[in-house]
Image (cartoon, rainbow, N blue to C red; front, side, top):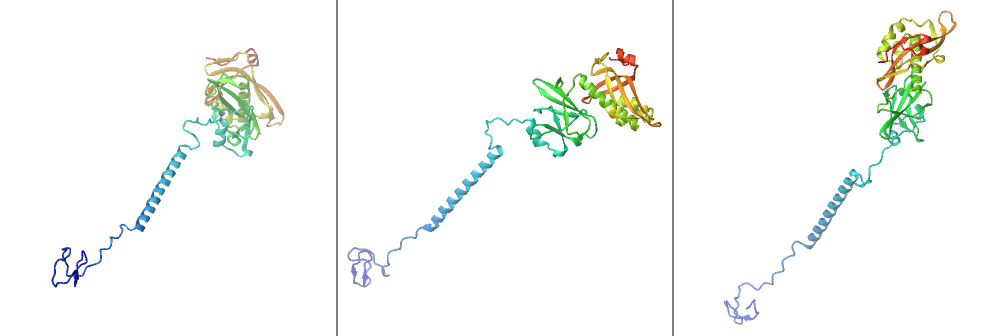
Length: 325
């Protein structure tokens, strides 16, 4: 016996197609239970996993963005704001960061306060320097290489420049003492004063006597090529080596009488006082050589360019044997 799937009324007649109570069509198959609700899609646990993954992805992106920002900030100078002034570089800080020498190789420069823009030369050639913890400038004594090296410091001063000199008799000396600062041009040029001429002549005359002893023209110092050539024959043939000259007890002086300045040149009379030992007899000998010397400015240094003998009388009265023009 069928029941109406809609109202549940009994339908007793065989083959009955419609419900007699509500008129709903009857099926030959027994009524089925109502359709179960469709499953939730996507499943709740899947949604939760996706949300977690999305949150993790967003967090990772944020971390990368922050890291990139930090890296860019560091590269541009995180410690210095855009509007902050650049750090002033001093001679001391520059020297300490770019040039260092072991303490035992340092030759300290006394009476010289290093400043920004200061340069240093040794016999006219550029020379590096450093600044110690106590603020004193120093050079590598190994860079000097020989005796009687003339150091020149060139320092900016307002709109101009100043220079000071120090003569290093031996690289093994612990210090070199600089003299008075004097106005100069940017390359260190100025008219040689008494201090410079004294230092130049001492170095030059010692080197000349050394060349006489060794018969080696290359021993000449503060000497131009022209002056080297003029002395070459006398030096190499031993014209002056009958005496072994004592450099420590020999020196050269000059007189202001007759001294004349020209364009990048200065001409004056000088007297070389020497002592030595006769190579044959062993007897001590001494003497004085008078000469007119002309020095010129070349390669960042005043150098002896020409020499001519003069008499003691010409030395005393200022008679020059070389043209000053």
